[in-house]
Amino acid sequence: MATTDNLPTELQVIAVRGVGWDCSSSATIVCALNGNLLGGAVASPIEIEARLLTTGASQIRNSASVTALEDRNLSNNS
Image (cartoon, rainbow, N blue to C red; front, side, top):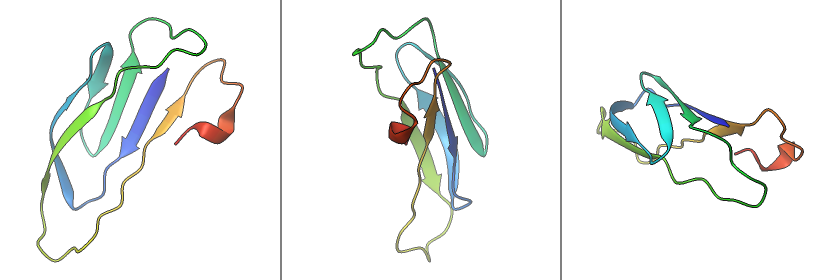
C-alpha cells in the first residue's frame, strides 16, 4: 500500500513519520507501507509536520490518496 500527498505550495515539509511506513518528502510526499495489510486491518497514521510559508492564507486544503495492488474498493482512497 502507498500514499501520495501533493502538498500545497504554501507548506514546506519539516518531517514525515509513521510506524511501519517508509516515506520520502519534497513537494510530493510518498509513503510505502512495510509489509502487507490484511483485510480489515488498519495501518498506523502518517504524520506530516510542515511550516506555513505565507501569512495571507486563511485556509489551506490538503488531501492525500491511497493505493494498493489489490484494492477492490476504489471509492475510499482519499
